[in-house]
Image 1 (tube, rainbow, N blue to C red):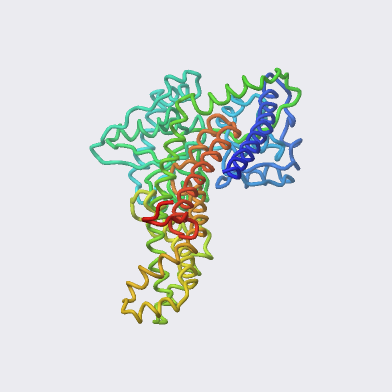
Image 2: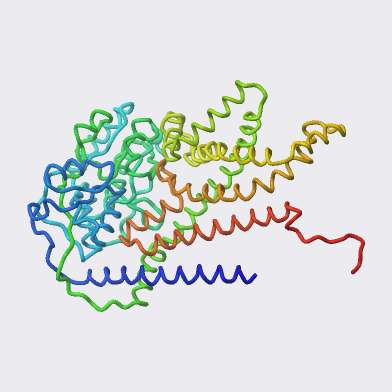
Length: 513
C-alpha cells in the first residue's frame, strides 16, 4: 500500500511539473501574440535559406523548392503542427493557402503572412474517375452559383465573423441516391468541425450543389493524406479539403472547375509585439474554455474515447482467440501447417502496423464500403494474434512436460490435460506479458485516423486545428490514455493475482483459528 501511494504521489508531482512548465511556455507564447508587430521576414527573398515547414501530402514541398530554393524543409502532418513548430522556433515559416493563412493570423496575432504571394492556386473538388457524371453536376452548379451570386454569399458567410450563422444546409434524402464526400476537417474556414458537426466553405458549396441535383451528401472526415487514395480506391465519391488542382493529381482523379482562386503565401512570426502581462490562472481558464467548453468540444473527446475503447476491446478479444489458434498451428506435428503459422507470425512482426492497417483498408477492403472501425478491429486483431501466439507458446512450453505425461497415464485426454493442467499453469507466465501487449494495443490505436476513424487522438487533432493550441489538447489526451491504460493494467493484474495460487493468501477451510 505504501509503495502504491508513493507511486501515485511521484506520478502526480511529475505531471504537475510538466503542467506548469508546459503552460508557462504556452502562456508566454500567447502573451507575445497580443498586439501588432513587424514581420520577421518581409519578403520571400529574405526568408530564402531558412528552415521551412511543409504539410505532408500537399504540393507545398514542390512550391517551397521553387520559390525558396535555398531553404531546407521538414514535413508535418497538418497546418496546426506547422504553426506549433513555427511558434516554438523549430521552423522559420511555412507555405499555405491564403484563406488558411488569413484564419491562422486572425487567431494567432504573433504570426502573420507575407502579402507577396509565392504562387497562384486553384482549389477544386476531386472526383472519382468512375463518377464522371458528378463532375458535370458540380461544374454546372459552380457556374450557376457564380453567375447568380450564391458563390459570393457563401464566401462572405464563411469568411465573416457571424459564427452563429455558420451552419450547413440540411442534407436531405436524395431521389438519385447518396454521394460520399471525403474531407479533411482541419482546415478552417474551408473545412472544419463546429459543435460536433462538419462545416465550412467547401462542404456548404458541395451540399448545396448536390442537393439541387437530387443527391444526399454524406461527409466523411479523414487525414489529408488519405483523401486521394480514398477516392481512387472508391471509398468515397468526391473529396474536398483545400485541394490544389495539379497536373499530377489529374492523372489519378477528375477535378471540378475551380471553386476558389487563392494564392500560396508564407506564414512567419511577428517581432516587437506589444505584450500584455500573461495572467497565469486567467490564461489557463481561458485556454481550457476554448479547447473544451466552447462549441461543446469536450463531447468530441468523449466520442473519440468511446471509439478508441471499442477498437481496443474487440481487437483484444478477437486477437487473443486468433492467437490461440495460431499457437496451436505452430505446435502442429504437420510441417506444412506449422510452417504456415511461422510465416504468418514473421510477416506480421516485420510489417509496420500503420502500413498493414492501410493495406487492409485500401487494398483488402478497397472496394468494400465496410465501416472503417470494423477494418481497424480486424487489422489490430490480426496483428495482435501474431504476438499473442508467441506468448502462449512460451507459456505452454514453460509447463513441465512430465505433468502432461502423468495426466495421460491417468487416462486424461489431450483436451482434458490442456484445459485442467497445462492452461492454468501457463496463464501465470502469459498474463504479465499479455498485459503489456494489451496496453500497447490501446496506444497503437492512435494511428486509426489514417483510415477516416475519429478516435481520441484524431479528435485532439481536430480541436487543435480550431484553437491552434497544442498544450491542453495533447496533455489531456495523454492523461486519458494514461488513465485508461492504468485501469486496464490493474484489471489484468488482479486477474493474474486471482489465477496464481502463490500470490493469493491461503486459508484452511474448516479450521478455526
